[in-house]
Length: 451
Image 1: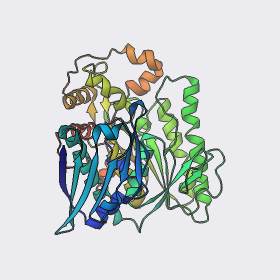
Image 2: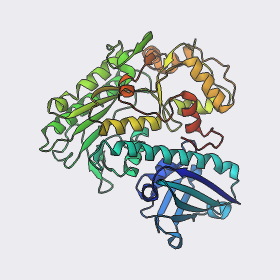
Image 3: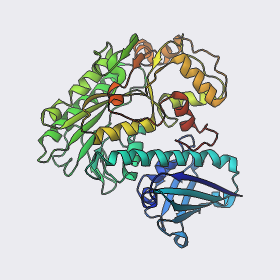
Image 4: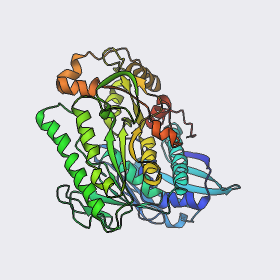
């Protein structure tokens, strides 16, 4: 079977081709609803190999074909790993055609035994990612003096791995600060308790995402892990940034809307709202305060107060997706809790803006413009998946799993948060409403490529 997908991208052909050739492109193009892990990227579009891990230990090895390499107009890859190569017979030809007005038509032609109905949603997703990523980087180009060298912690997490790929495809260099042995020239070993004095040498900016997951029962040990993994390491990283002979221009750290407390009713919360009550509110306040040494040393600091990230790759949606897909989803309790959410790709755009926009500093609410109640979230997810959602989750269920405090801080948390500073800065959202964000990340758009 032969399947072709073509779409116009409003960027010049050289930049579109270069985007595909940079590290991170495969990770940006693999749809999150497909159970695939990128194990290795191709070092070259001429003759490199990309390796993807599939369930049951299978490997998808895409070998690029030297005879099809014609930059910036064409490259191709062939599936060469068995038994998939014999079963699917995959050959993927990528064509790039310039049009007037600095536009490029991207055409993907696949020869395979897979039906076109399977490929349609995947290639529509790829087009949306390409268009939106290129647009975000084009907007950032006017603010940045040039490509940045960004030191990044937490690169093994959902947000960190996606942000690394997003930045490198945009032409930036990412230096991964890792706790284990460095695996490449752009890896540096980071000891959170005693960071090396040269850790941030040659770095233009730092993005600090590392921290223990808050998910789980709120035992004394778990709570201590949450605090210890954030406060101390952030303090020492901020101190190091401040005393560098050439300090990084900015330190962008993860934070959370947990700052506003567990339940503020219908109060609309902005960056100027007061801190709320509860364990997580205290942790977040101390976490943000830990960046003070950098700020006092003249480094621009941004604390990204992140809402509930929507991606089937992790977080709550990863847990809810299979339940709702099976028709077993429903509202939590009375369903009146406010959920302030953000799509994963929109969160990456927030981090990019924080890096390049020198007018942004301090707390930044990384949420979509319109929060929803739990009942609306439930109904929207069910509608996207075309499944019923009539089984309410009894209140005692989360308490059994998380304990009383964990239930209050996580399952029943209600925060109606507004991204006031992002909107004032003219930030542009890819998916400002919940339904479009879920359809994009779950592959339920009907094959519509527009982003």
